[in-house]
Each structure stands twice: as structure tokens, then as C-alpha cells.
Length: 244
Length: 244
DNA sequence: CGCACGGTTGACGATATTCAAAGGCTGTGG
DNA sequence: CCACAGCCTTTGAATATCGTCAACCGTGCG
Image (cartoon, rainbow over all chains, first blue to last red; front, side, top):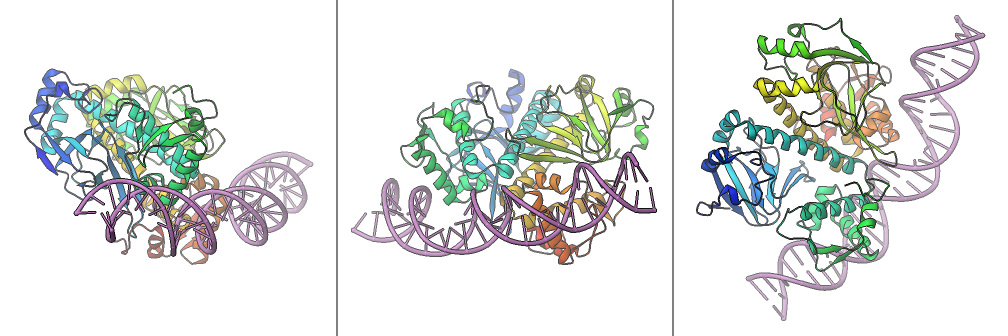
């Protein structure tokens, strides 16, 4: 991990300005955030926070992909969140964190020291409102994921995951514009996200490839050839999925 | 559903006073809530809200048990939340609800009309703070449930569920003090909560019975004979589980 | 060049689902 | 009070999906 004291871009030029925890702030409020913010960078594979750690700062993901996961005593792992740019790490009012945060790719965080940030919540309603919104959105997402984990087949899980990658990368998530898209996770990490084994992930991805739904350049870069078929495989709704 | 305009108990005598969305309010603030609140009762089996419904009010569960669930196009169901007394239904700033809410037992709700409640959020920080806390707690719970759904075996799922029932009923949840405890859900509902089939739920419950971990009076009332063994079966941590 | 890591593929097996039938409560009506 | 209907639950047998184990491949890096 490296602290980038020098590279602290202006908030006004921030790529996640319109979606992150600061999205509702006016110029004045941004200045208050600017004072307590600092950038931190992590290389792919770095542990960002350990379960049980003192939570010294909260942060927004500026660039890259990070994972939240929980490990059972015997080593089974379940990923409980995937953080893409503009997503938020940490919760106010709680001193420790209850899962591991790991950089899946190279990651840049915009960090706020927790104590001043907590104080700021009381004085800047635009931040606390937005934070509430983010928390509730994450809760909705978690509940959708519960449906996937509890009820979907391996094939449906994979298709849902790929479709989600397409959607989030399109909407200005990563730096990449569209084709070719990228899987920011290894097969093993995907399996932990979907509640499968890495072998099953591999088999299902290759099945979609053989059926002509996906095309792979290398293991990580891919294109969707048949969006219709991909959506049909998610089990999400019977019709063509026109209503986004 | 029936609206109980007459039976509107004083907040100060409310059984969920110390844990619900109002728990941080002082006397003044309680009065503000009192004005916009009304009690509604539902019989077991009643639908409280339908997915997609206009969300005209938000509410706290005062008595009984309600379920949140999502249904896939082909009928598969996944429960995404179990609401016990003091739990909260609805979210501010969103007009519709994205899952079905059903009364599992007879239920009494303390309802707040959504619009005045939203306004109140801006003026009464003790409510919005508590609401944030509740949302974040639910997010934590949802993430724990993701581990259960994605990684636990049928046996572990059942044991975890039973242990959760014990814990929540002990802490003054339902009206019942301890033994005998009650399963507020049918086998079918439990299966939807745990991502299993009802047959598997039945088999696993009977397995725990045969092993002398649980004893059943009727289908719903039970006692835990061997708490240690129950916890060991959850897969949650290797040690005795002394640290709550 | 060769090692290491991630990924693929195959054979086999286990866990949970599916399908089917029968066994109890509970409540209602005769 | 008993009989019957309906629902929930139990139990069994067969099946399927996914996991496990193991070998192999390919790509990138030292």
C-alpha cells in the first residue's frame, strides 16, 4: 500500500464525483471533505483491510475493483460484495470491520479519516443523506444477491454475473468503454462470489462460449455476442429484458 | 387487515420502545412521532405489501413475525428478510417496495405515513441516525445470510436458523420467555429462507431431533436440549461459541 | 528454459432435489 | 363427539446437479 500525498486531485475533477458519497455536496462542502481526504493506492492482491481491524478510515473506490469477503473457520469463503469505482467502504459509528477487503485489481481509494468524517456527518446533511442512500442501495443489492445464492442454478449465476459486469462497465464504471469487457476476478474469486467451485465456473463460462453467447480473447477479456441469450440464461425475467 | 385507531398505546409503554426506530428519541420527539403513527393489524397469512406497491407508509413491527421475499418468474421463492418485533419496514426516499411482505403470524404494525415521516427525518436527527444504524445492521445481517446461502450445508443452515430463533426470542423478541420456543414459520417458509426444499428442512430438523439436540412438542414448539451441539452444527466457529 | 499459477477437462461421488405416497394435526360440520 | 377435509409434514426411492479429486494445459515471468 502507498499513500499518495502529492497526487490529491481536485474533487471537481474527480471521475466518481457524481456518484460517490460526495455527489450531493456543493463547493463549500467539498472543501470540507478535501481537507480530510487522502489518496491510497494498492496493488492487485493487496489486502486493504482485515476482518476485525480497527477502522481508521472510510473510503470511496476511485479506480479499480476490490472485494469484500468472509471466511469460515474451515476456510470456506463467501464474497459478500464487489466494490467498483464510486462504491463506499466502511460504516460510521462502528469501530471495526467484519470482513476482509482485498484489491482484486490495482486500486485507488479516496480515504477519509474516520473520526473527522463522523463529525462531518453531523454537520453536512448532504453527506449523511447520500450515505444513507448508498447503504440502502447496497442492502437492495445484497437482497438480490441472496436470490442468486439461494435459488439460482450454476448457469444462471454465471449469466447473471456476466450481465452485471457488462452493465456496470458500460455505465462509466471502469476506464474501459465497452468491447472488449473485462472480468476483474479470477475463476476462483468468481466462484467465491457466486457460491460455486472454480471448476463449475470454468465449465459454465466455457459452455456459454461454446454456445456462441460469449467470445474470449484471453482469460479475462471477453465480448458478449448474444446479449439476448445471455439475459435469457440469467433466469431474471421471462421477456426480453427490454425494461432495464 | 384492520386499522386500530382506538388502540394506539402511548409510546412510553411500547414494548419495542428501546430498540425500534424511535429508540433514541426524547419525550418531545416521541410526541412528534405519536401524531403521525397508527396501528395496523394483520392475520397470519395476510399480505402486508406487494412487490411494486406504492409505499404509502413505513412501519415498525410491534408484535408478530413478517417475511420479506422475492419470487422469480418461474415461481422459485427466496426470502430475503425475517422481521421480528422492533424491525423496520420500508425505506425513505423510495416510493415503491421491491419485495413482498407477508404476515407469518398475526402481526401488529406501528405505521407512519411516508410523507410526514420523510419530513420528520430532516428535523429529528435522532430518528434518521437510528434509521441509518438499522439499515447498516440489516446490511450486516444480509451479508451473514449470504455466507449461509452460498456456503453452508443443509445441516448448517438449519442449525444456524434454529440458533437464531433461540437468540432472538430470548432477547425479549416475542412474548414468549424461553422454553418452549416457537418456529414462527412453516417448513415451506423455512426452506425459502434457507435456500432449500421443504423436504430437506424436514429431514434435517428430524435429524437434530433424533440426535437429541432438539425436542419437539408439536410441529412449531420446540426446546433446545443441547445448545453446545446446536452451535457446533452451525459451522460458525470452532470453539464453544462462548463469545456471543 | 522451466517453474508457477491459473485455468481446463474428465471421472466419480455426495448432497440435496424431485417425485411420490402416506401419515398426522386442526378445524369444521354433521 | 366423531368424521372428514385440507394442509402441513414426514418418509422413501430415484435422480440430478454440483463438488471433489486428479491430471493436464498454457501463459507469463524469473
